[in-house]
Image 1 (tube, helix red, strand yellow):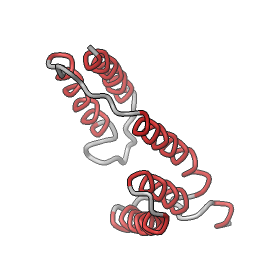
Image 2 (spheres, one colour; image 1 turned 30 degrees about the vertical axis):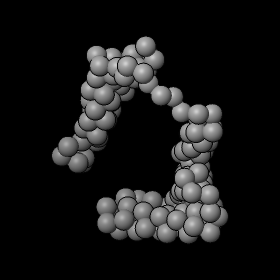
Image 3 (cartoon, helix red, strand yellow; image 1 turned 120 degrees about the vertical axis):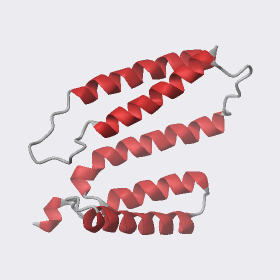
Length: 145
């Protein structure tokens, strides 16, 4: 029963995401695919998964224990804080901190998590800025002048 409830909620969210993506306006000089295609693909995949959960639920679903639920909630909070901190603090610092925190949740080692955060932040910035040509600010705007 819990799979069907979750599948129904996910169906509503996927449809809501799809409808909100139709409201996106394409700029004059946009990518040939436009900004709508990625949300359409994500919502379509979520819709397929949710309908599958409704039609064919697990007979005896296993829910995670409390420790795992706490880790999942912590990861959710980290990702929300990450999204809100990008504009204020630039790309490098929030990405390093968020990826280090998520890495620590997976394997609690401060050195390995810190190294992962630093390397991932620098690598992603290099790929996004120079490989894909995105206009990312590495540091907070107030530090750049």
